[in-house]
Image 1 (cartoon, rainbow, N blue to C red):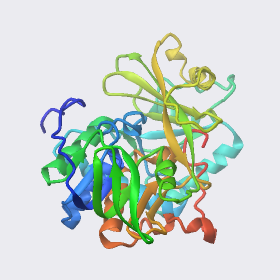
Image 2: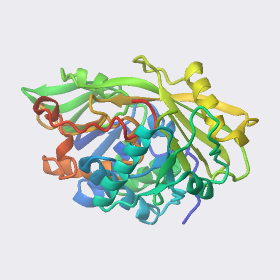
Image 3: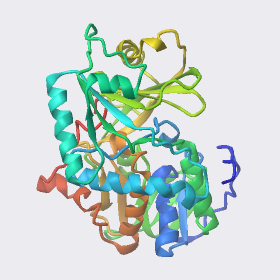
Image 4: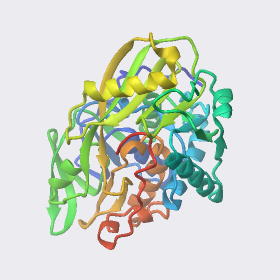
Length: 403
């Protein structure tokens, strides 16, 4: 495989054509994957991906790279397991080393409630054919030797779940790999092109307005994490979504020392070590709605204090930088993917903390939904209608941070 290009690689940035079969709004991981699978799987290549800034410059550049499929509910487990299987062959398919590393994802438990919840999830995973196992504190220590299993801490470790097939990948490489393949297939990737409105004919979308002029479109697919409700409001669509800053940080570069991904629901922290050597840590989200992409010191401070009890070896490591990604959160902490009440307008949003790990599956299934005009079977449970029928998929306990 060739060496990955720089994230600042200059793509051809064509002027928008007057009309496209499909216009995708948002050139993050999901938007680029959707464009690639539209062209590859369905032969739809007259596609434009519009990006207000630069390719993969939004949430895709701010996520913490964790990949896993050990979700509780059948609907979630199905789409995330499909995604993990795609991940396992994605570097070869895209001819790009994504630094996909199946180093294992371990979820610590610190209370009897968490132990019971963890074992319940393991049983559900195994029933769905997903690898999952329970570790005692001693087995936790054997799997990750630098973890502190002393009982004399605020959050003593009572055990852990483990998905050995889980791991991490390099987020910007993923985006650029999808972008390059979509570009090769004839998709137009148009940067510095901001959506300013929609063109409607009755209850049907027929095009979009942008700062680079109007574009006619057979279909329009929204795919802008963190700002989906803002875009939808332009066409009078009120989505059941709130946006929050989700905190994260990286450390200075270290020698390899952390051999897996470690999560903790009680502490609201997860940590891995990137290939370059920095520690990548995710924290809780702010308690207020915002589009600010900056860290809140009190969230970071609490996260670090608790994390250092688990990993005392990191007590003298320096923080390099903190930031926030903007997460769309639905009432049931599960995504919205599918059709909207407006004909030929599609929506993909609300992934919360699950967006990166879902990237290939989200692109694959969303592309089929757009091409065929009906939900992919894996998307069917996640349509907008579930908020009126009550068929919710409550995954509030699925992530290692506070939704």
